Image (tube, rainbow, N blue to C red; front, side, top):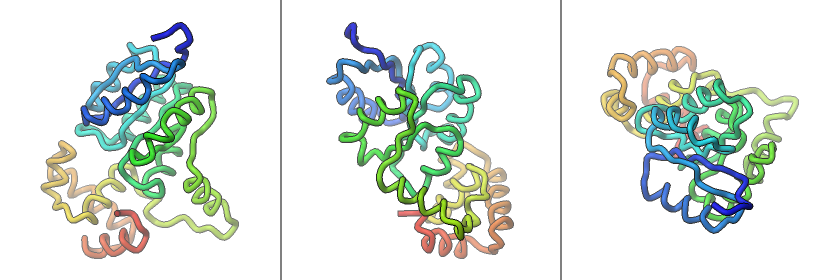
Length: 215
């Protein structure tokens, strides 16, 4: 850390290679220093408190907890802390949900190498970071005749379950991946089907494809 380093960044991502890549990018900046890192949601919540960070880079897909759940807990403890979400998912899939939960910005991992530093500086300065594409999506949603799609009424876990079912995963596979019981995932599935007025996983998949919720 140099004397000019004024932005302390905490990285939460379960992939060591991704964390190392992010650290290499940030190591080249005189005003940014990595103050800590974690590979699970539980560790992120424990360790970010000790890092005295200004910005948290938070993966939306952690192995033990959904990143948006971690985001909400971090913001409940430190409302003014800037959290920049990182994701493999397209911006139109999780970005708006993240921003509504309190994120200061949303960055896809594909765009991170060229946009990461600018995004960190922007949110550290108290602004929000949105890409040009996301800005267009947000602008479209402000239209007078915009009607929110039914999937926006789902909880974060229900939405995550929807996208995983639509990607072809079984309830057992989802339960294993999210460290939940099969019964809990089945309840999420039943609730989201009811909210969306659908009956089968096939109908969920068609809906997700039609609304471009999966790649």
